Image 1 (cartoon, rainbow, N blue to C red):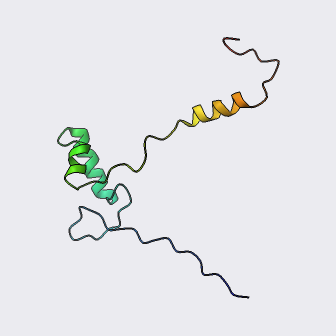
Image 2: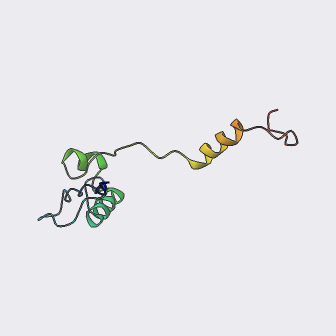
Image 3: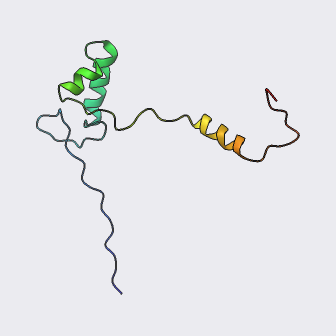
Length: 91
């Protein structure tokens, strides 16, 4: 019987803005320190996210905003069998 080799996670790419690249990119192509610096620039109004992306200093978001867990849970409750003792609003 042969043993399967454990799967390795791919090595993360280096940070886009560190010179020389020394830390792995974790957030939108940036290391934690560079990501925090970029967020501070955006919050201070010195740059916009679109400018940083256009200049190649930050990657675009991989997905949209996260769905609300509350809404997901509410849909689960509504799909389940309703309790006859609970009166729903609008019913």
